[in-house]
Amino acid sequence: MEKYVCLICGYVYDPEIGDEDNGIKPGTKFEDLPEDWVCPVCSATKDNFEKQED
Image (cartoon, rainbow, N blue to C red; front, side, top):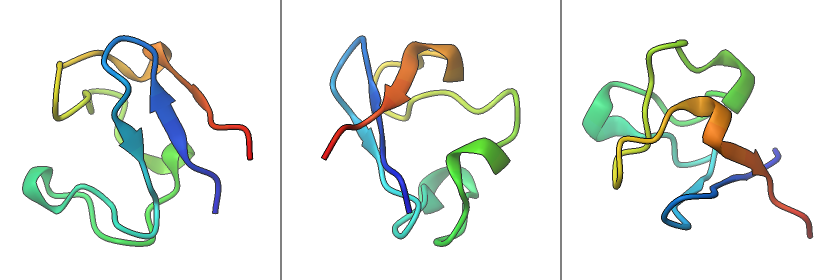
């Protein structure tokens, strides 16, 4: 699965890990995150993330 990096703080959303502290289960694709989900580190919105290049 593709990882996404926050352009503000550098946090990497890894779908294999999810964001369980905020109710996002492992296996949740970035595209399937709720629209109101924010970066758990800096509270940036989803539009501040971009796909991480390998």
